[in-house]
Length: 410
Image (cartoon, rainbow, N blue to C red):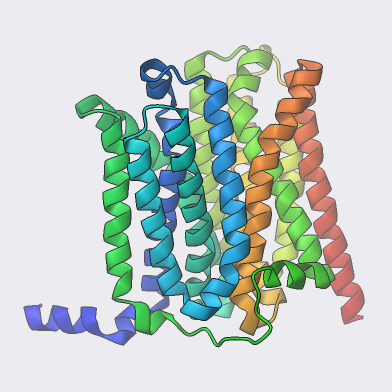
């Protein structure tokens, strides 16, 4: 193919607005954000050794990042309406770059806290803005599959950082991990600038406001139940991820290597599960029913894992972990698709940003709630049953949503 032909394809609006190409770009942007978000966790052992950072401090700093992401996602909806999702996405990527550079120069808790606050804010901006861009171009009949693919960015970014951080630390030094993330984020922000004209199709709504997304969600019974389900599923997912390896080491007497393998299996299953569940929801044309199925399967897997012992075959425990990976992580893309479908299209930016707030709040609350239960009971079995109960409650909420939709149709 000639150089002129290649330039013509790359500069054409058709290439820039093709739904597959937009999906690839948004998934890459979200992957970059997820990698930045989990950078501190990946660098945890190194920072603990070099800066004397306690493991609990890393947990608190991650909680700070999730909290800042929640605030950013609530406030960013009206900004997307006023300035367009592409500009906001650029802003979020530059936020990530600034946060990563701040982490690279950190030598104490104060700068680490500042860096995680900035990164959390950037993550809370990139998620909603990239989803709004994607919602403009994805086909309605492929909406569940499309958003599920985009959400593979979260486990994908975590996996990427799990490889990149140790490699960069070993070959250079840990601050270079932050520099690499900053460079990639800034470069992507420059690339996104070239799509500004083609990706900004938001029609301003006079009713838009910073908390408009939350008002829309609380005013609509279907959206309200979906948001509550999201909060509960996020609690169970993040809380269970935090305690999976520890729980298996205690209940099943897994070695660190075996527990680490279980965690890796969970992440791999999470990626594959989002493809599978998104495809299934589009084929079945009923997002809520698939969400109900994943919620029940997740609750069953978590509660069964609470009962494992050293006598259980390792393969059966790994199978339960895979079920948790598929069912416990695959709901996020379906949730975003359901919100876009259930709400008014001219307020999609506010709805998407408001919906992300419940994900972030669940991410903050999950480890805190499960940590509190463990502190009170000193039992991993009870802690896992508690998380399974949260997942089951989320499934019951979505069952109520299905019942409400059916009653309205009748």
